[in-house]
Image (cartoon, rainbow, N blue to C red; front, side, top):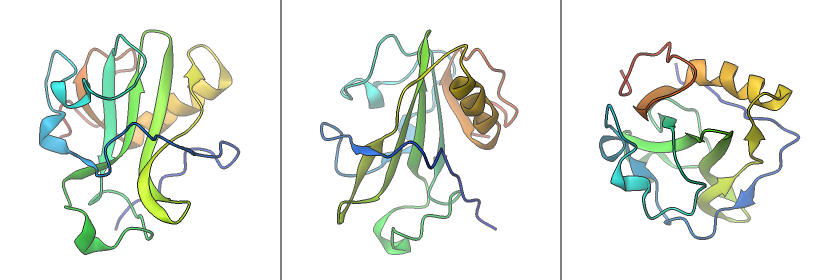
Length: 140
C-alpha cells in the first residue's frame, strides 16, 4: 500500500519556479558521501548537508497520473542544510504539475522536530545527516 505524506496543512506551497518541470530520478540522487550533481542547478540554500525523499512508487499522489511519472521518480524532497530543512513536492498546483516549496524549518524549532519525525518515513539518499536514517542509507 502506498503511503500518504502530509508535510503540514498550515504550510501553503509556493511554486518552485526555477526548478525543472519534471521530477528527479532517484538514481541521480544516490551518493553515499556527497550530495550529487542532480541538485547542483537547483536554487537551494548551500551548503547541502543531506538529501532525503520519496519516489512516486512510495507516495500516494492522486494528482499525478501513474503513466506520467516513472515509479523511480522522486516526488518529495527534503534538503537538509547545516541550519534548516527545505521541503519540496512535485504535485498538482495552480492547474499544473510542478515542483512546489513549503516553508523552510529552522533546526532547533518545533517545526524542525516535525520534519525530523517525518524523515523516518523518507528514504535517505546522500550526504551526512544530523538524524540517523531509520530507512537505511541510499534509499534502501
